Image (tube, rainbow, N blue to C red; front, side):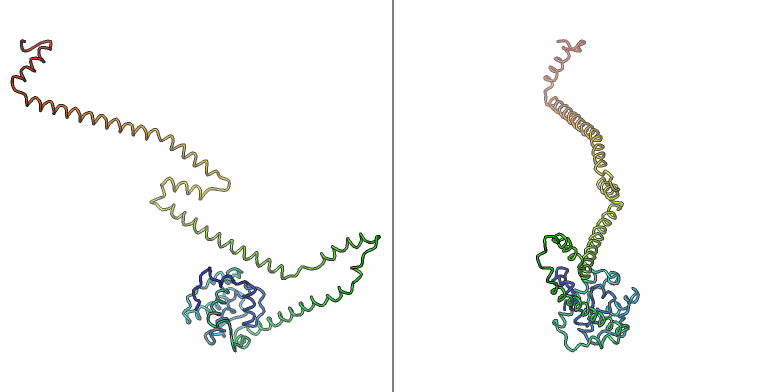
Length: 334
């Protein structure tokens, strides 16, 4: 069974018109929008159609108006999911608000699940009889029947005026030279006076609602990412790092604030501090040179002492006389 369906599954590419036709055919309703099923009663009856007897229909409220009453319907639906071991998560807080996109996605999942169970065909399911046991079920059936009759009347009335327009053959006759401008000026007004069907406006409004819902989801996604970055920057281990300071300036920058100027100032500050680093490195270099010279002097003294110890007493005496004769007060006579 299709209890787990990915977001890129073909089920989530089913259009609204197909979803509405499936609901109205299965349950004998007359829904015009998917979000009209946000009360959860339709979902309960859809589950009852594929699992007869599993849903306690006497607990379902088709007349639910407030969020509290809708939540009770979703509790019944959740109990049915638990009985059937369905792991689908129901986002009740979003569905009860009547958002078109959320309700469409959940109904797409419902259609995929019901088709996987019943094979796309329902036999001997009496939707009207099952709905009579629900609270407000009879009223929902009456409303559906009245809406069906009204749509049938509107369609018949839209077809009726057509023969009257065919009788006006004079409109197609070539106008005379005196009245040509008069008829030509009235022709566009007759076209503009035709009312635009309300269905087109409703479809446009639904598309705009879906677009707004998608934008809100995208906004919430990026806001959560920025919040994670902010929490990371507030960590005591990384709070004092220069990079974290730059990130905070970008996060908390007001509209129109020049964040690049602050970065340039920080770069200039690092440039002013760089000679200190150079001088310290130069001092270290000089100290290394002095240390190496001291080591060489010590090594030379050790070598001279070793050489003196290897000389004979006569050679030592001659070397000392050479040194003393060159002095101002010799101790030995040459």
